Image (cartoon, rainbow, N blue to C red; front, top):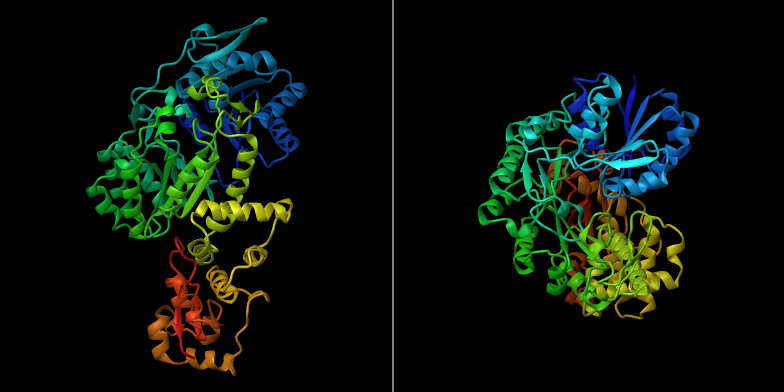
Length: 585
């Protein structure tokens, strides 16, 4: 008997935590379990052939909104080439309508709904060892002749300490991949758009086991550990002890990503966070909306004023990467009101601002209320909203284009000073700028093809030109500075070039002065100039660029040519990719 646990991840760097839980929970009683992971970018024929060649008797798929259609296609074809194969599906995408799905898809033999560890083990005992009664296995939907039967629900596992670590067998195969991990199950919130609201209460994994797993991750120097806890800091004593353990055992390489509720962080926790290593922690904060009426309609209890205060404090620490989320398409929030939410969150200056679009997930409360709010949405996964009573499809399309502009020009961190200069001098609100840029982008047809890094800077320069704003020369200097902050490379010709006699010789002389190395490049002490030049760049500017980026009001008043040294050899590139110094050569 050979059993396969498999799924289609959304990206190569992602890993399936659910498969590892099932494997670790059952492996001592079933030595025939195997794990194979694919991605949605793999051709379904490739996945089909690989699974078929494995000669498995039972194949189990973990199903999510991103892999539903591909998974079902593979299932149908697997049964065609191997009719005796047993197919089991599980995961949130099939948990809420298993009977309807099995009516449509005759090739599915079993569906596991909800928390799967105990259900999966009992089902394997029935299938492999012929133990138990099928109708008594809670949490499954199965066939009996022509009928489809859904058994009673499985109770949640009360003591999470009974679940073995999903990483008990080591980290082989995790090279260059994200490690997903959880220390809790459930969520304290009851947001009507989220599946976490279908399960009440929060359960905690024992801290001793958590620390043991974290020790393995740190010892093996994995690149990133992403906690999937819905609200990591729901219980201060739990979350703070875990973060303290990470800090005390920091390997100066691994970083940890948490989803937190910012308004739960107290002064003691903030004081602790202010001292952690730069880049060690990443915080994702789901703001979703700043409109009180919308928050009430989705049962979301967040005090935005407290959230804002906490986020600003963390931002000022300059050591934690902040990722803030918004959701478009929520009840009562029209296009203009969403722009206000955008502006209020943008003002918090996160490292990443994600504009998401509401998905009416199966099993969610908001999907049940779809008629109340007039929701029209895609019938196929991921069930994304098209419009509702408050926002029409044409405005959703505008927001889609604005989302693309935010991703390219804000989240990339490649245009920080240029965009700040434009918004500060020519727009009332950030949303107005991104809206105008989106209109320009679409009008010029830039959305039809992908663009390289240099082209993006040229496009922003053309946008500036199209508005006939003054001080183009100043803006071009700031744009060039942003370009050079991203990394070493050839400066595009559309940027101004300030000629300086014997420029290369001056650089050579500068790098041979010990005083200059000590002052500007202490990490390079004892390194030959020809080696240094691979990690640094000298650029001449027409204006005092350091003054300009510090004060956008300076404008054209500071026309003084100067040289800036860019150093790209940083220990941590969390907030910037380079250090810079104004120098004399």
